[in-house]
Length: 118
Length: 481
Image 1 (cartoon, each protein chain N blue to C red):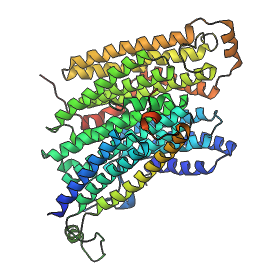
Image 2: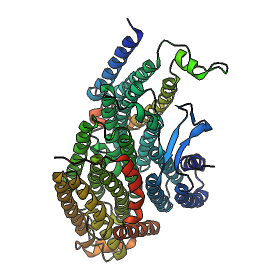
Image 3: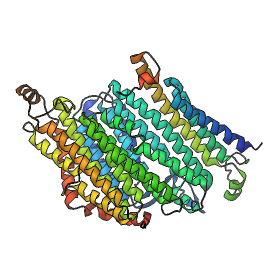
Image 4: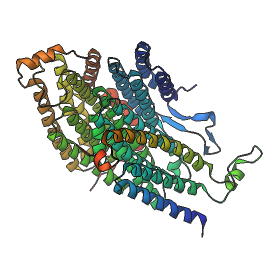
């Protein structure tokens, strides 16, 4: 089967698993893992958009721009995914830190207890 | 040479330096004052037009690098942002705890919001969108209470969902146009492609989160209500200008296209819902900070409605209302901060503060009249313009809702004024009030904000004359039958 289609289906499944986990799983750590899965699904979408069966996108000095653009994969998406991984890692780190603080207070990881409206 | 990127680079560098100055309170204080003055100068040193990072610019029609676009409208927005940021920084100088963290985070926030307003590149916009959500949570954690951690975690979970969906929307737009530069993308977006429509709707999810429109209003209210008084002032300023920056991008890309009409309806509905929810919830609150926070949501609804109308007058009115709103709402939050120095923020326990601090009471009353849209204050001017813009496109129902919501705002604001300043109290409470001081720097900031309220109320054209040229470029005139 076409590589791109398989990849899109996989990323769709990841996004759905992520959204399901965030909304319906009670454990706060599992919620955070689900957010990670959701983010990875989106990253996979970006990578797949850039893939067109081309070569690695490194522009050598003797290659003209239009030949390079036709032959290589789309380099923009790869840069985006790298940036996004860094941002997401920092977000998740802050969230894990806060859940440790709240765990010490409540001695449980149930989000129905920790995040209860008051 | 164009010094435009200094608006973003200077605060980020100063944020890093401030982060290293932990424990050196005196240096932090002087440096904060210096930064507060420089921030106001920053919006004036850039040149109008496009700016490309890296010096490559456009080569054979290929846009390379992060792009910024600067014009008078964005300059006005940045000047107001800088004024409020420096007033809040000056107010924060009077506080003792973790001052350098507060300065670091608010400078990072200033840089991110400035970048979001200037951005001509969707991914740069997304990166700063994520940074600002971490910054807001960090500012919330400075208050250090358990509720703050709870609502911070809730805010971040919601934020991660919204940001991921927004990135998915950007991915859709990238897939169907092949570029992320907004000016460039505009040329490829004309076709009636369902993928572009999907991308647009996913962007709206990010918009709702960033500005606190429903369904994200609860987490935003908790964010405002549980941080310290003067910090809520800067937080709500960030949210309003994120909304303005976001709407400018959406309007620049999509306004006037055939499939945008459906999104118009979605945005208008979000705006109207935010207006009504905000004011109805505010009427029920007994905590002063929470009441003000719900009003912040309600006024965000006004801004969103004005911008979503998409006509030149609607855009001008929306941005003018955003500017007015950040001014008077910051004044109100500073007033709440001064009151909390005397005795908390529970409306049922307060009262009788008018003889203790009559000048603060007068200034807060001015801000309260401004938020309810009473002439001659600035809130009246922009609400009038919003109602006119709604009438111009033949949507009188929106104008009527705006006026009804204004009345609700007036009622709850006057209730709060009575309970805090006028309600008679016993001798003991008055002695308690007199034993506690007033933060002088906060009163100074409050004075400047109140004078801005009155000046903009009498001479609105100081601001509006700069808004019309770009609004005419973005807006599309139409009239419903």
